[in-house]
Image (tube, helix red, strand yellow):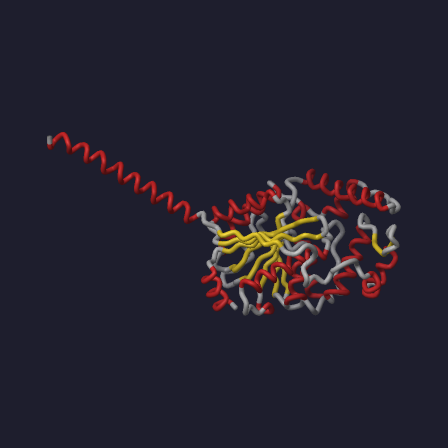
Length: 361
């Protein structure tokens, strides 16, 4: 009897042990993937701190940049506007806006580089500043150090962050001409000089590596990722944008201007390769950023990126969970019929974030 019972006990022990280890593994898996996600929906329209409420004040803009006057037209309602499918008019509008509202009087971009819509870009910065202020009540914004991934030749996020909140900004880009131009903007405008610096990213597959140094700490990062997967896809998207602008003009009864050729469309409206497309498009870009950010989890308080495609928000959440992020916020921004959003994430708990601020300002 005794000898018959012995093997049974031996078989039972490993079975119980296996069950325990399986349960333990399941618990560990759940704890690793726990990510606190908060969806933030602001009021419709631009942020209350955004300087570009309502229609453009063309009197003010022409006073800041008289050259713009030659490109101002009247819409069917008799209101002043410009031809938004004319790249020269759009660039001059941006120059006027930056001069009139941000005291950036020396600004230009090389032919073919992205000319961003300033009001929408500014909203990203204002809502990110609000996130910081709500999270950290006693934060001094002039002590904030920010990093912009893919700063571009236009340098728009450092311009807004520095002039509106006093942030100190580092911009990074894989394109040498973008970096040179952005640094030139920073050096030629007293409101930016000494507070904005742009660095070349030597490795196109990296985001933070080679840019964030061992002794550097950042309160936040910003990014406007490439949208498309290929040049061909980017060309189609840009052509579609021009067609929509033309269609809207027809509906409003505005006169048609000559349509740009395929080449001039890409040069004037599309931006450069790094600004527009990358292998795998936005989904691959933000996934790779999420995983690389883990390596700098102690040096950055809040990472963030714009996400153009709504379906990529869920994708980003999954990748942040896998990367081990602790908390994420999905912040929606609505301007008219357009809804955009950014995701901000951190690898630090609320308690760790407060300690981070005590040590790093």
